[in-house]
Length: 615
Image (tube, rainbow, N blue to C red; front, side, top):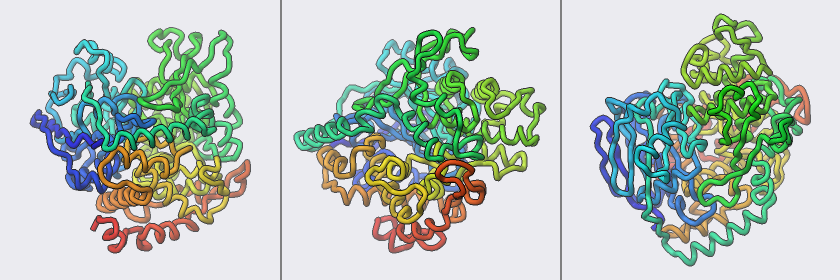
C-alpha cells in the first residue's frame, strides 16, 4: 500500500505509452521518488551518456507518502543525467502536480528516446496519450499551462512544462508546474526540451490507499501538531517564508555578495522578507499573501505583485499580476550576488524565471560571474550588446534575464552557466560552484559545514542535500559553531542520509526544521507495507547516497571533484564574524570519507557496498 505499484514507460521515439508493474523489491530498498527513480536510472542508462542524447532518460517520480494526508505530501522529483553538471540530477518540486500524478495511479513516469516533433503527455488516470504540441512550442510555461487546460476544458488538470529556456537548450532550464513551482536545478528542463517534450498534463481522482489507516492517521496527527508548535514551521516560515533568512545570514557574515568576493551585503535589508512586507509609496506591499503546496500546513510560498510604476512592468500589464514571489535563494542569487538591491527588479527577474523555466540560482550566479568579468574588462559591451553589466545595475540584471530566457544575444552566453562561461573567457576560477553547479546562498567561509556539504553533494553544489545551516545557525537539532570544523563530517553525513530518505518518501524537506526521523518513520510505517523504523529509514538514505555516488564515479567524477573554488579555500572573508576565515575543507573531507566507508580517493569500499546491498 501507499505505492500505486505501477509506472508508465513513455517511448518518445516510437510514440508509445506502456504500463509496467513497479519493482517492489527495489521499492523496499529505495522507498520511492528520489531513491527509486535513481535506481531505475542507474539500471537503465550508461552513466557516460550525453545528457541531451535520446539515450538519456528522464524520470518523474512520486514517493509513497505523496498524495496522502501527511503534511507536505505533495512532492515529486525529476531524475536524469543533468545537462548542467553531467552528474546524476534529481530536482524536487512541490505544488499540486505530484499529488495529481499519484492520484492518477502512478508512482513513476519514465521518458526515453526523442520525439520527432514537439509533443505533450496527457495522463487521465490510466489513460495515456502523446499529443501534438506544435501550438504550444515557443510559448511560455504560463501560456502552456493555461492553454492545455483550455484545450481539454478542465481547469483542474495539473501541468508541468518547459518554457523557451528549455526549448533553446539553456543549460539550467527547469521544469515548472502550477505556474511557479519548479524542479529547478541541474538542467532537467534542458533534458526535457532535448526530447521534444513540451509538457506533462495529468488529471487523477483514484485516491491513495495506505497500509494501516489508523496507525497512519495517528502518526500524521502527531506530526502536524509538532509542525504547528515549532517556531520555524509554525511562525517564521508562514510569516516570512525562507526570506526570513536574508538578514540573519548577512549578520553572521555568510551572505555571498558580488560573486562571493564579499560575505556581507550592505543593502541586504532592502531585499529581505521584512522589505517584502513593507508598505511602498503607492500604499501596497510587494508581498500579497502566502500560499501552500498540496497538503502543506506550513505555507511558506510567497505571492507577490510588482509596483505598477516600476520600470519593469510600467508598460507591460501582463506582469502587473500577483504571482510567485521571492524565496531566499532567488532573492540572494538575483540580488546580493549581483549587488542589486532593487526588490521590484529582482521580483520581476524571478517572474521571468517562472514564466520561461529557468533556475534563478544558477541564473543569478552566472550573471554575477559575468559582472565580475565585465568589471575586470574580460567582457565588454561588445560581447554584451551594449549592456553595462556592472554589480548593482538593476536594469542590466533585467535585460540579461530576459535575453537568457529567450536564448538571444548575450543571454545565450549566460545560458551556458557560470562554469562554461568563465572557462570560455579564460577565467574558470570565477565559477563559484562544485561539479559545474553554482553555490546557493550560504558562504562556507562563515558556515564551515556547508563547504563540506557543497564539495560532496552528488548533484553539484546544493543546500538541499545537507542543510547544516539548521544546526550551525538555527540550532536545529542542536547548536554547533559555524566557524568550527570539529564534528562537521558526522553532521554532514547524518543530514545527507536523512535528507535522502525524506526526499524518497515524498515529503518536503522543510518539515525537518521541526521533525526528526522519529516523527517521519511512523508515518511511512503506517502508510507502507513492511517495517519502517528510524534505523531502516536512515539506512535507506545511506543506500541512496552511495548509489548516486557510484553513478557519478562511473560517469567520470573522482574524489578530486570534491573540492571548492580557490576563492573559498584561499581568500579570507573580509568582514563579519568570519573575518579572516577560509573554508577548511581539508580538515573535514578525510574524516567524512572514513565515516562514509569510502577509501582515501572517495570510492565506496566493497564492505560498504555489500552492507548496503549495492555490490
